[in-house]
Amino acid sequence: YGKHKVDFSLVYQLTFDPSRDLNSVIQTMMSSGVLVYAEPLYVHQMSFNPNDPSANLTGQYALTKINAYNAWNVEQGDTNVVIGIVDSGTDWDHPDLQANVAYNWNDPINGVDDDNDGYIDNFRGWDVSENDNDPMVVNSDHGSHVSGCADAVTNNGVGVASPGFRCRFLPVKSCLDASTTSIDNGYDGVYYAADHGCDVINCSWGRGGGPSQFEQDVINFAVLDHDAVMVAAAGNTSSEEADYPPAYTNVVSVAATSSNDAKAGFSTYDFSVDVCAPGNQIYATVYNDTYTSYSGTSMASPIAAGGVGLIRSRFPSMNALQAAEQLRITCDNIYNTPTSNSAYRDKLGKGRINLYKAVTDTTSPGVVVENLTTSDNNDNVFIAGDTLQFQALFHNLLRPTTNLTCTLTTSSTNITILPATYNPGAVNSGDTISNFSLPFRAIINAGTPLNTVVPFKITMYD
Image (tube, rainbow, N blue to C red):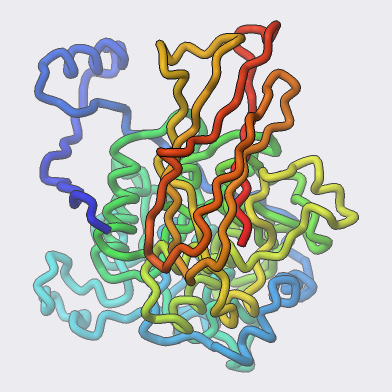
């Protein structure tokens, strides 16, 4: 992608006296002048809402809703495509999971690091929290349920089916089991999954608060350096906010819907959301060879991740960003349904995933906005009377456009948009163009109060 690689040899973890003030410690460290950043190692929580475990197989409605059955008529997954499940572990001997585990045949369990990767006997995944080769769930069956949502063995006459079908999954136990004492916040697991060849990595966990440069670096390491699609649960706050990791650049953020395509009541929504998937009362595998139904964006995320596995199986030449965009642009619009999703306009991403479209669409372009800058050609303190200029890079990740038009709009009455259509026309696959010579412009109207928040929207049409 033409980016600098992430160098984790320059990242250090400091443990200090807890009686010291965190901000004071950070300021002292930064005052040395030798650090790029100093920040907390954030604690993450799993994104699921346990529900009545006696739910029946209607909890498999998600497969019909995302058009998986028609998709499987076209693509049933490639055993060489691996979905990394970074979670509380898995039930690796479950009869509906065991055959889909991505076994490392180059390092059988014999007490020797046969493949010289630094991990002894990592035959069926790894526990980065305890630094051992047993990613079995202990105190939380969250990871075993997430595994089944993404990649339960399908068409085997046992239990449930899953979007990933024949794809394999790599269990990476990381940070989310209360029985561990390791200082590991999930990103060690992302690192391991990326470094061990996963094509898709699912993170059904997250946190609120602000972004972390270290966490973004791990994301970039996985996506840009190792070509893995990052998929993450948007969160279960029932409110509008940016959760992390889903809100990071290069991550597919997944909100949850119910069986009628309405936003699930618990689901977080935000402009950072990319897609939706069913997440309410999902029936899947849990520890000790059993099944149950859970609700949460934790379930929606691996359903989407399983779908990405099908995309990477169907289109093996696509890179990670292209596969993620293919999932997004083939979603079904759920804003105009009778479910009143109109209240969340543009905050549930492109819509609810449609796997049949995702594995059959070979014509749609996938233009994304990159490096958007806003200025007033003065002091960049925006006040009434200023004319703002919006300049952006437009990157076409997928097929060529024929007549691309890009238009700036806003719902705010405090803004007057000046003639604002940018028409680059034909844009080839992989090309990046800009409106630097013809920026979008908008005037802040007289009387606009200070600290007014104004949403702007760039609509791209081809």
